[in-house]
Length: 164
Image (spheres, rainbow, N blue to C red):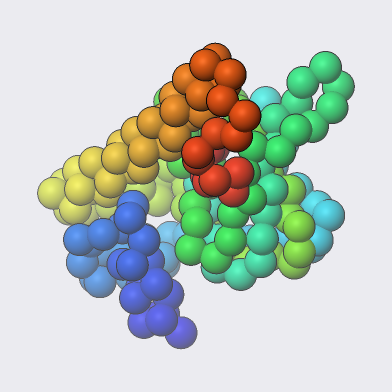
């Protein structure tokens, strides 16, 4: 089972190039979260100390506006969310709702700190990968905003593109 998880993580952009022994070390310090359909992983403005890697199920990323929740993105297996918590230490910027029963790996800031202490080079690579993922999402958000500003009828970015 652990080898399967490690292989799956290595196929994800944020863990690309990370050695199996480091991922095994990280997994040993991580939790598995099971969230039933209709329940939240977390809500906007919650305190943030971890990120999630979705292993099974689908989630909706929602943003509140004037008392209503609006869909930002839908994510599926292999996608990650909540990673900004590891970078900026601010409260959650959006809510994540399970659209079906979900299983996700929860990676805490402390577990990444343990990787930092164990292998600085691998920690730096994870941080660079996280930065690239956040940058990719920012580019998508910029493109959507620009197209809306220009009056484009349908933004070219697919509505399920991750923007968390």
